Length: 375
Image 1 (cartoon, rainbow, N blue to C red):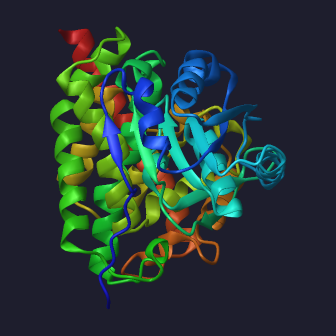
Image 2: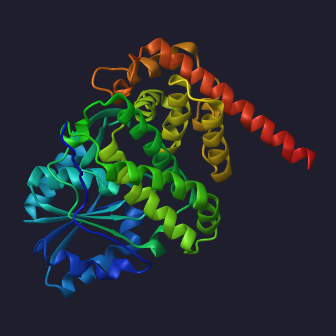
Image 3: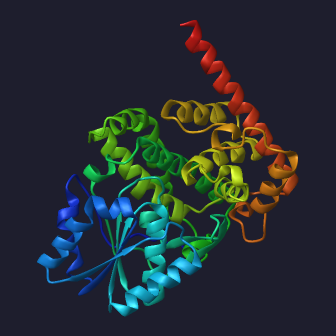
């Protein structure tokens, strides 16, 4: 099997980085379509347009509709074509970034990704997640290239609620366990065109996990008071770069498939992607028969940073058997990454793993609350 590594053209991270975007853009295009949500555009849309103008680059701002759906992507492609854009700047969270990358893909245009919240590892990947108009997972769109540039301004990141940074840790948490599953099974990675993992991909996954465990709780506290610290910078890099490289190049497995299944349930719509993925990690570990020590590490980390560990914490306080069965059946649909596991996986197995993970998480949470009350 060949070894393949996908990566963005450039990655640049520091406080105040947004004002330097023009210097990166001047090599990529002459007319930019800036895509972002209302909050993201109000935060830095003006700074981006000014920096681009300093380099003689025209800029049209387009408000993102909120869901990375086929209809929204088609609308944005039309806007880009109308304004003669040869460069897309995707600004905001994971959905806006996925939409912007998809527009770049359709136009064969360059793309700069500027995340303002660090809730997923979407910024670095050659992949866009497509959702239905109601927000349910529909499909993955494999892009012809990774972003030309990923620019991260940590001063912007800390203006977002800390919940988003924590959700990004949930998405990043999956990379070590999912890439390990793919390596054990030896399955071809569809995210890299069927290539196998490099040694570098495994190193990224291990470093991502180590960084989360070492700096996660500190970074959450820094985000809660909106300050940039070395710990926060480390977690931002882990959530975006380390997670993005290890996830794409190492492969997805059970956690993301279980996330996709959970999106079928209306009660989970208010939970963020990384929050559902974090619970998916627990369910994957149960499904794979991992040790109590390994599951305990994930439970301890998740509770320390504020990630969900049971169904109630992702909006499913009293789910029915039929609901969890639906999620499980969706998780094992043809083409889902859970089939990268080293043994055949059925809906019955996933259903059992979800219920068991929920029980473990709830028991861990209750035990923690008892310890707090005693002290």
